[in-house]
Image 1 (cartoon, rainbow, N blue to C red):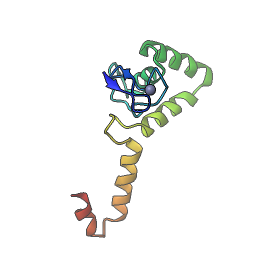
Image 2: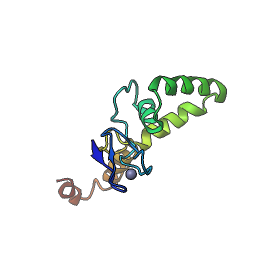
Image 3: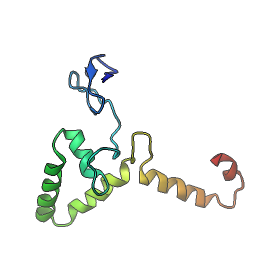
Length: 114
Ligand SMILES: [Zn+2]
C-alpha cells in the first residue's frame, strides 16, 4: 500500500491513479507485469484498468480497421514511454546519443558522462 500524494488516502501500490481523487500516482511506463512484446499493451491495460488480453484484442481489431495506422501509434507509444518508472524513453536515449555524436569533437563530453 502507498499513500496518495494529493488526498492522503491509502491506495494499492501498483495503482497508477488514486481511486479516491484521480491523481496520477505513477509515471506512465512499460515496466509492468504481463508484458509480451514491448510492454505497450500491458502499460495501456494498467493505465485503463482493464485486462491486457482485451488491449491485445482491441489492438488487433483496430489494426484490421485502420490498416497500418495503429502499429505506427504503437511504435510511437513505445518511443515516448520509459521501460520502467525510473528509466528513460527510447526517444530520449536516442536524442541523448545524437547530441553526444554532435559533440564528439568536444572533449568535455567525457567529463559530463561521469
Ligand atoms: Zn487521492
